[in-house]
Length: 592
Image (cartoon, rainbow, N blue to C red):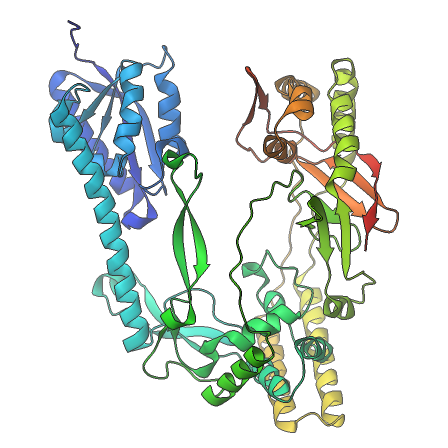
């Protein structure tokens, strides 16, 4: 019979997430204190620590960064510890995670110590299995109870109090202070309530949208009119929170969203969307879930009983706009069955005309990449751009892979290193950013923009646009102009050059890419897609010349996780840091 010895060197594991509403340092301290109190009587000391911050308990160990590092360390005979101690099982294990993790501890002969069993877990003990299973169930139940309580409280606050519950304000509104938080603890921490009030400039745009729509104008015509009048679109008005948007002007979709938002009636509306946990891999349930936002049916939206903020649109006009949308078929939504497509070059293609990312789309069962540039964008930015630009993936991949294979061929390693280094040095002569300009220049540009708007609005007034509406526009711009003058402060932005890699660093990185040629030639399409992304591949399509330019543009200051691709019994490991390399030109068939 095997004799279990008492270990003296332990690794500590703990976890805290945003759901716990705890200070990470305080949480770590009490968990470690419990763990230390368990092992000190037997002479144990903690020699390694693995602590996950911001990781939900529902995430499996393999997908938690520090927990996964701990599992990797178990296989290392020189790991430096003989046992792992945790401060609280509910923090470490959720649902069936203990049953999926403990076999690894047993296999590598590493004990797991838990305060609730008074020491090491005995893998052969049914009682210990039962206890840990109960704690996993309690952890899951605790998380579910918290979710139910929070959702019930938020629904009551929205319906009865009409409270603003966070998030970005709708276009046309801005947030103002509404007094101290009613919770004494949160009020003591300085938290305050907020409410929506009409924006001095953008509220007029919302009103005008409804007026034009109810007068019979279409979405495109409305977007065109807003661009011509100089109104900033939602993404232009708040670029910091709309970094994923183009910021190129009004589009039909932006107008449609405003026409569908019931909060313009003055009511607070909550639960339009929900977070839903979806299985990450249907064939591997142990991989856990990922959280996705889903739209709820309008019948499940929570409306405030009373008016919560100043309305920009009457309930009657909102309902009339809804009737117009649905009667024309434009407001009907259809359930679509999602088909998972593999795009090997997803997120890597850009359009040379507008510089935007091209989106993946399947046509005739073949992967394409499309740049859709609405006509209202082209008019607003004076850009000559086809409505749609297409390029086929199968026309690009053969030449692209051939270029990459040659680039990393053994006999070209020295030449590749020199090219990478030379390009990096030539790029170093030009800073990554230039001086942004002083306060007087910035203020002058902003004031000139306001003056241009005022001229447009006066022209609109002379053209017969409603005087009351134009008056609101003019008042809003004048208020904006006064704010610019009052807040003008000289600023200066200094450029910071990017870090440079030496030839020796580049050489070590390329050595880590030794198997990349095999990966590119034989790997599964989904694996190749990860490889292209790790390489920092950038593709630019010129629809006029039907040419794709391929470049490697990895930022050496950004560290990415290793991409491992399995081919038969071989494993190819991708390095993550690489400077920009020279490019290759690929002539393809494209369409507009």
